[in-house]
Length: 142
Length: 324
Image (cartoon, rainbow over all chains, first blue to last red; front, top):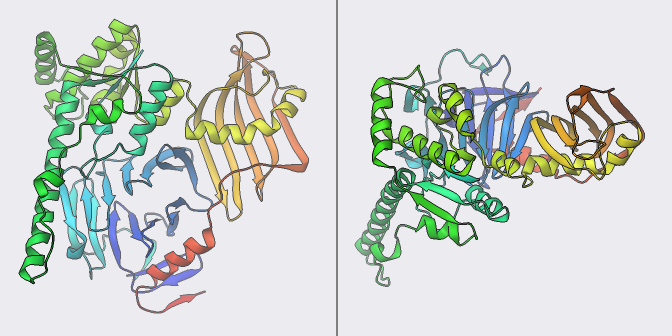
């Protein structure tokens, strides 16, 4: 999967977790970045565990909340590396070194999801492992 | 005043050995104000059940690791997963912070009431769901009881059964304030939240000038409430902030309210606007200051260059990337 982000074009990108329309990535230091793929252009929202430049946010006791035009979209806990949606029915997701937890009780070992374009695809109806790219993500260049 | 907790704000995905930061800060905030925390028995039972699952899984993983070592003939000390990994005592962990904790079981009449409301989908049951979860309604009934007995209480919960509209009238009648974030509970207890701290760091340095420019507010800066906050960072630090704020007014017991907007550049305030100003509900003129010499402030500014480089590295995906 190819991805355009600002003036950069990235080829053959693997997305470990697609949470709704948001790609959740983890760098070699274990920090989380999030790219919103749902608009006409890919938009970086979180970079290295911090709100990205030009992104609205509000600090919380253990991380921050991402906003869009003043409306809360989701919260991110830096301590637990977990996400909670505030604008949709997406289940919570938590990223740890060994596993990904979706909602309550759904645990996927990270070793199971390597090598796919999208390792785990999560939406409000559930989740799929080793999923293909969903339609409608106009931000991607295929 | 007491703070009642639903199980969803306590949930973790791992065996708890110490309180998560958000819960620790909640306990410390409550302790600082002498406000006890109430755990409905349902909440504690749900928490313990989830923790037992995590503990069982962790023990199994440790046992599997031991067996793997032994299969390769690796010598090791004796490992006893059952004694090494156990469920933490949540109440003790919370009380260690100095807060008083009460565990309250539902009464028989609350069981009956929750059963009836759940079956008939009565408030607080949301109308757009078929869920028949009685546990959430039980916690609701306990929270109402606490609020009525104390005169007021806070229910901290993210569950739609607790925070959505069907329960609004009943909650208001019982003086039960429903909040979905620890930061909001802190603000309700007049303990500085992370948002309040950030707002104070921005406004305190320029407050005297705002008041001298005609802002009808008291001195020193006394933030009494903040709603709808939004901050934006640029490459070189905070560049924009806005929120609805409430502070002390010019006279004893008065309150000023207004919409705050701050524009910053390179860590310094260039412009501050407080609009839609009221004092005890009466409209007042807006106040706008453009600083000829921007006022430096201290806020955190992450190293975006390093973070973006780390992101570039993982997006490279082993193939080439081009910059257009």
